[in-house]
Structure formats: structure tokens, C-alpha cells
Length: 411
Length: 140
Image (cartoon, chains in turn cyan, blue):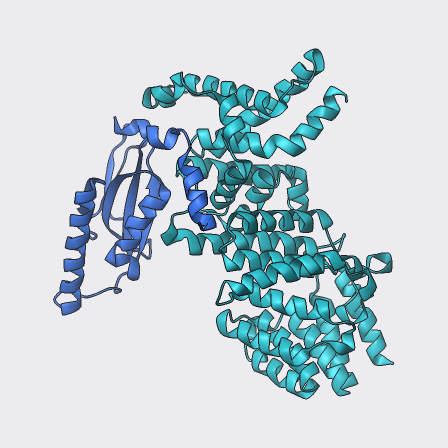
């Protein structure tokens, strides 16, 4: 293996572990940690090319990054005056620390730090993608439709805030855990939804973001096996993702659930997701991710669209609406009720939402109304609702799918 | 053994970091929108004063307060000296919707600890508490 190839491999496999060890040792100073880990990789590019790849590359990088951190701290008179113990650090052996540290624990700490409520909602996701998932700045910039330099500035500013305000690098104590875990799960969920339906395609689906969200959800479920919602999120993502291959049709168009070829659904993922869901249900009162996973499981288990258990799905959406009310949930309930009890019943639920002026420009509401009107035999009303939904959609594949359904409805 | 307890035990087995070495100080600025909160002379106001007294006692006991005081919200003076030319003006007033009526300087391990104290303050119910990390060397 060439030095460049080895470096790339190590970057993928061990960067998170090196960054986690150094960040922990620096008391959560992610700004300094990212800088010195970057420096260590730059040094590796030179050294490994000249002298070959070290036997334990992760340990080498940790030691190098730690030396670079000490150099910077020694030059920073403020830090040197305030933390002589840290700068001298005679007893600290970074290699040993790297060997002894648990990558998983550090990743979990990193997740809680990056998803801290004192950071802006957008930047939490960007930081998580950078420092936990290891995505590059250009990749993250693309996901956010931002320029690379603007994204880099936002990340730098967020890392400075973590260091300056001292957002702790730790698993939150019990009294904060429920609230903070909900914040972490939300970020992982948003990473998935961004991959599942990119806000402004193309491409309509980004598999790398979906896979990364699932990896993070697996990590959370493994490390917090008593948290029903962590298991619920993993189950939800697995069961939803099992359908990914069937969601994109020829020419990159999105295929809706009723038209999907169920034979290409990933049976292994469905099985795994159903197993995790069962585990979550055993932990007691289900939270909103568990309920959503249960809905996804009912879809996944239906052998055909016509065999979908709509009454039970409508009931689960009603449950979801009670615990976590939102227009999205109500729209989904309306669609489910439309199948369980007929389109008129579904439309009646949507009429209740129409009173809310904020939803006038909400694309899913118009799309759902169009479908229900079509099935109720109201071709003119359906056409008008399709037109509104198409005008409001930012995703080209989604627009194309709506246009196709509008044409199909017309004939 | 629950997963969390197991995790907590593993996390204890770590070496000290900067968090143990360098203390943090935060300035807590307490604001409230005029007209909100209990009015002086009402039983609600007296009850809030009692809660402030209890909280201040708790904070003193925990040894976290470096300085704290209420502020006269209407007696503000601003000084500027562009090019050494000193001007003193009355105010500012009414430029902000919220009145700064008190501050604390606390010495705590991290932002979560500062936030926890702020959340206990009675005025958090109807006002806000702005938390500003202090730059270390300025306190010497």
C-alpha cells in the first residue's frame, strides 16, 4: 500500500478516534483539537512518504497532534500561565491514552457536544457531520447549499464558541440527559431526512447522508440500549431506508410508496429494523420515534400497497399527533384516514388545517389534498391542488413526480 | 447493570483534562421586559424576593458567586471619549426592549453549570438571562 493510500485509509478509519482522544484531553476545545489533528495529518503526508507508514498510525497521529497542541499552548502565554500542569504534562502519554480510550465513548461525547442547545440548530448538524461523521467541508457545504468558505467560517465560529463558552465534552448527567438526547436524536434524524429528500435536488436522494445517519443511530442505540427513543430512531431509519432503492425510478424521479416495486426493498434492513423496534417496545411507553418506527414497520410488512393496514396506521398517527402535534403528522393522519375510511374523511381532516394561514405555502398539504380529491373524483379540485404543490416544491424529482400524478389524474 | 451505569463507570476512568485545570467564569446578565413579572408591593413580589434570598444563600454555600448585584435600571450613564474628547450622556433608555436589572459573576466548571444556576433564577420565568464567558486573563 502506498503512503498516500494508507493515509487516506487511516483518515477514514482513525480520524474520529484521534480527534476524540485529543478533544477529550484538551477539555473539549474542539477548535484547537481540529487544528492540531489537521496538522498531524499534514505532517503524516510528509513523514510517511519519507519513512514509511508507522506500525500504529492512529497512535502516531495522536502523539503528533498532542505535540502540536502543546506547542500551540506553550506559545499561548495565557494558557501557559493558567494551566502549567497541562502544558508541562510530564505524566501524559498520548499513545497510551489513544490505546486505552474507547472510540465509541468519545464519539458519544462528541455528539452531545456538537448537538448542544447553546449552538444554533443548523450548525449542530454541520458540526456533527464534520467532527463525528468525518465528512469534508465541501461535502457539508453541498448538503447545506452553502459556499465552502461560508461553511468553513460557520464551523470555525461554532468551534470557537464551544471552546470559549466551554460547552462540556461529556455525556450529560441524568437530569439533563432526556432533553439533550432528544436534541442529539433530532440532529441524526435531520441528517437522515436531508439524505432521504434533499431540500434542493439534484440528486433527489443522498445515500451517503442516509448511511451516515444510520451509523450514528446505531452508535447511539448500542451505547444507550436503555433509551427507547434511541432504539426507536434506529428502527425508524432502518425501516425507512429499506425502501431507498425503490424510491428512485428511471431518470432520477421519485417513486411514491403505492408505485414502488416491493421486491427491491431491503429485507435484511426490514428484519433488523423490526427487531430493534421490538426491543424498543419492550422498554415501555413508546416515544414519537418508536411510534413512527411502528408505522414504518406496518408499511414494510405489507406484501402489497392494497394490503396496507390503514386503520392501524391511522391510529398510530393519532397517537403521534397526541404526543407530538405538528401539521406534518396531521397531514399523514389525513392520508391514512383517507385510505381507512374513504377520501372524504381524509379531506375533512385537511380542512381543519386550512384554517392555519402559515400552512398556505406548505407543499405537503397541497400534495395530500390533490391526492385525496383525485380519489374522491374531484378532478378539477385535484388539478388546482397539484398545481399549487408543484409550484411550492424545491426538489426537481419531487416536482416531476407530482407532475406525473397530475397528468395521470387528468386522464 | 444498565448500559448507562456501565458507561458512567467507564467514563470515570479518564485522566484529568483542562476542565479540571482551568476554571471558568461567566457573567450572567439578568434582563426583563418592562411591565412583566410581579409588581412591588404585591404578595407575589414578596414571594419572589424570598426565592431570590434562598437562591443567593444556595449559591453562596456552593461558593460559586464571585460578584453580584442589582442595578438601578433608570440611572444609567454613558461615557465616550473619541480622540480624548470626553462626553457624558444620560441613558441609554428604551433602545432595548429588555431592562438589565442585575448581574452575577460565577465561577463554575462549564456552560451547563452556569446554565443550571441561571435556570433557577426567579426572573427566568418572565425575563431572560444572558450568559457571557469571561476571557481568563482579564480577572487577574
